[in-house]
Image (tube, rainbow, N blue to C red; front, side, top):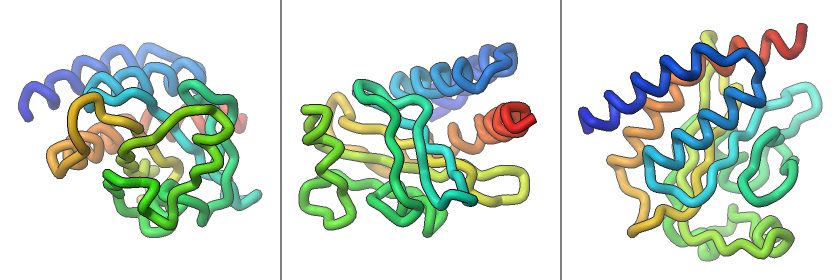
Length: 163
């Protein structure tokens, strides 16, 4: 686990040098996939005014927009708790229409909320399809630490984008 924390610290140096949210999201996504050996990553941003979660960046598919209470990502937002779902097609919260639209087959999912400085959820990071095996508690711990690590940078980027 120490190696993962060192990897995250090195990543932080790169992240702080970026200015635009698109660049930050791409770097966050790439690092999260490498950290947990995942095939895909989506970072959902909360739009409380319009009551949606949306992605600026989704591997392999265009922009995704869902309601705040839809799917596993919506449940992660609502509960403010991470989720591990290793059999998504057996989970009633899973949204298979996104797989149908993209032709992708989701085998397992891990989601973690991203909190701002007021401890409000500003986003959700979702990883799909661990390359070997299922997601476990070590993955959950590492991704939670990672989300906490990137939250300040993401919060600043969102504030700057609004300005």
